[in-house]
Length: 149
Image (cartoon, rainbow, N blue to C red):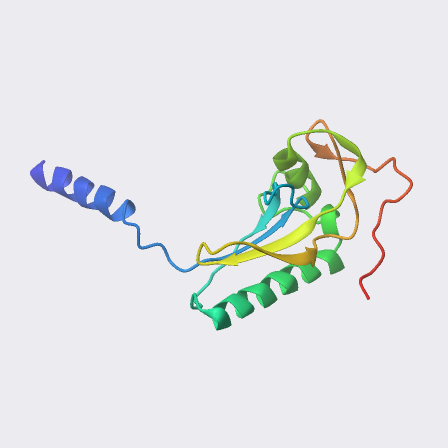
């Protein structure tokens, strides 16, 4: 019994250590308002890089590459890895938490090792429209942003 208690305490202590691995955060969010943005979708990241300038640049590249791959494969319409037949757009609308029928632009943000986020440009060119927590077709006159030159 004593061994079970000791092992449980060791597991609890190990789970509460603050030695988190370096992380490259890559997120699609709303445009910043007062230096804040709402995260619409987060890319999962396995990061073994450093927290210096080189690591930051590699993280930014990885983030742009992930966003470009998502865009090339259908953008908001791609099935989310979370399952339940939800699309990336459905996840984004759920995270947005409000209806948006005219469409909102998205931005791409990256951060390495909990440093401040950098805006990396547009997230997904198609505007995001939401109703009842799900992605819907936009009703506005513009539904896709022009390509960046």
